[in-house]
Amino acid sequence: MLSFASAEDRKHIPGLETMCREVVALDPPALPRSGRYFLYTGLSLVSKLPAIARMSHSKPMVQALRERIASGAFDLVHVEFTQMAHYVEWTGDVPAILDESDIAFVRRERFAQTTDSQAVRLLLNWDTRKLKEYEIRYCGRFQGILVRTDHDRQLLQSFLPVARIEVFPPWVDLSFAGRVREEPKEENLLFYGAMWRPANEQAVSYFVKQILPRIRVSNREVRFTVLGSRPSERLRRMQGEKVCVTGYVEDVAPYYSRACVVVVPLRSGSGIKGKIVQALACGKPVVTTSVGAEGIPAAERDGLFIRDDPQPFAECVRWLLEQRRYLDFREPARQFVRRFYDWKAGVERLEHLYREVTHAAKVVRH
Image (cartoon, rainbow, N blue to C red; front, side, top):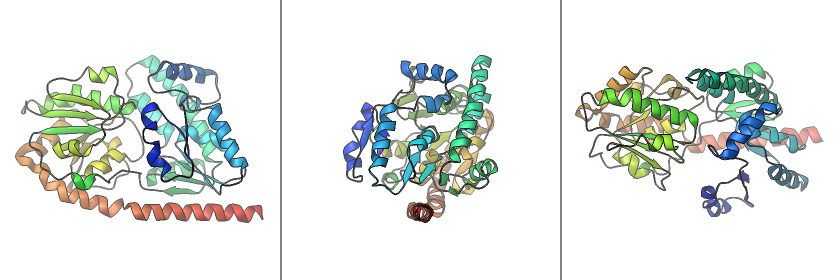
């Protein structure tokens, strides 16, 4: 396993070493919101790589990859995330699979459309065009591509008609869901996600400013918790008596236990949102937007409610809180996840793809 790893990430390397023959942890070229992050964003203006790929490019990573490929000890390379796709340049004749957790240029387009600043929007649109060209060009060099939804498969297939593209369920940690059992004692709402991602910060800001005040018109006691790593100072300043921004926590189960409803008011992004599947697995109803619900085949009877405007969103949350209706969706939500997101079946499909790709590569060589 070759990976970039922050100081926080390195604490978990011993666990990975129980599963991998070798773990190589390299310093990330840039961390979100750091000075180097903005430097790399600027450098992308004069680079053939779009911003997210430029700030993920590392000579030590190239060297580590080339050394291991040269050893001849590997049958296949599995690459995670669009911004790492250009590393296929150094995989030689070893077949490679790319995991596209979402279509990156779609995510960027949507984020640009919801940005208030015209100057930022113009810059994002310019970079999005470069990102789209990069994503399609490099996806075409992989022997297999994993996506999360059939919508993403069809979209990518329209650009790459002969590519092998498979729909694979999201990698969602559900191991703690069985420990989410107690009934909430207060009216708590929860948002959980990587808070350094712009789409998540945008969603929380939108909720606090546009939706939460409408919920509190009839219920002043509602609490809102924002759970997730590396929140910005802007988000931390939103904290108050009944708004809590936690940052990273070791165990998320207690926060799900205390939550009545999970809110996911995303205005940008693409692909399946693992945070929604995770919440449903914990027996929590979710109120989200059309962007948030994209690719998840759940209905309101399963606990997934789609509301795109602030007032209907707030009314839906209030309705779930009234007379503790949220408890009615605890078991239906869990049953939905068991039906559609079985981990064992997903792993078997992935291993089948590995076998087919490696077999085809051997046939070509001989």
